[in-house]
Amino acid sequence: MILYLLRHAIAVNRGDPAYGQDSQRPLTPKGERRMHLAAKGMLAMGLSFEGILSSPYVRAKQTADIVAEVLQAPAHVDLSPALVPEGDPRQMIAELQHHDRTHQNLLLVGHEPYLSHLISTLLTGRPALEIVMKKGGLCKLSADRWRYGRCATLEWLLAPRQLRRLG
Image (cartoon, rainbow, N blue to C red; front, side, top):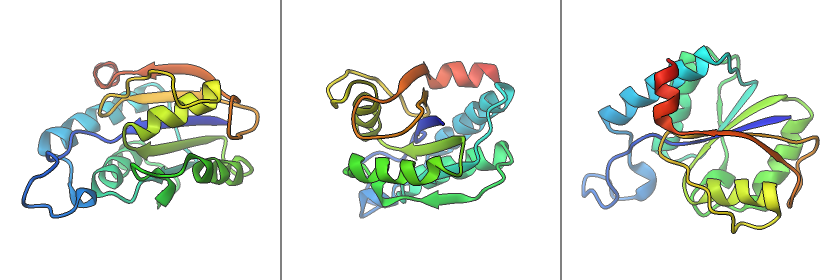
């Protein structure tokens, strides 16, 4: 199975009084524009996803929706509580095991530092590997079977600027 991990695009600043809860912060217009360009880069790379799981936070869901629209994804975006910033990696890996039977290419859309910790755990067995996931950055991992601990191979990690240049 191939797993893609995408950090949400640029969002309204934390603490903005217009949004009482962090989970309600949306993408900025700049974030939306840049994510459209990054998604076009994904399209130019020939990427497709049989499933898309997103954090239920507004900014992550908006990011996932942009990707699904540009790539004309066959499936709708499903929300996963395991992808919230303080989500449980064990719960996410259990979801991956479930999707492993039905999806060869799965996209996860979430937040930092959660995504970096998940990537590190899948690559090394511990969440300590220093990985930088910029807003709109995309990582590709592969594994025969998902489990908590070292099980994956890093195929690549792209900065958002690289994705935008491809589109």
